[in-house]
Image (tube, rainbow, N blue to C red; front, side):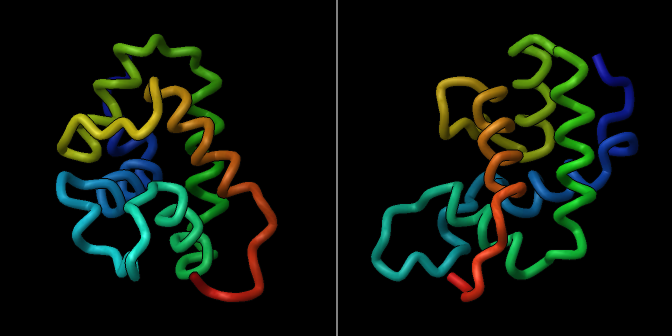
Length: 110
């Protein structure tokens, strides 16, 4: 287990906590569409491009540790303050976030 996640993975901890806290679905302008974590991640890319590479580095470092699902669940749940898991596993969620952050940035905002 990681002894000090919020220090060692500061940017990732902030990203998760700021974007996927307990009531995250009520703080985004959904404009009639269903709440979707992928939209939030893409918006983060557009609004804070200077932080994207740091979060990517944190995610790559975390996923390389080969932590089991319970350890990842503890990390994500502590960062978000809830049992947030839009996909079957926390690993799948983190891997999908990483994929989205590595996609080419769109020209227009969401």
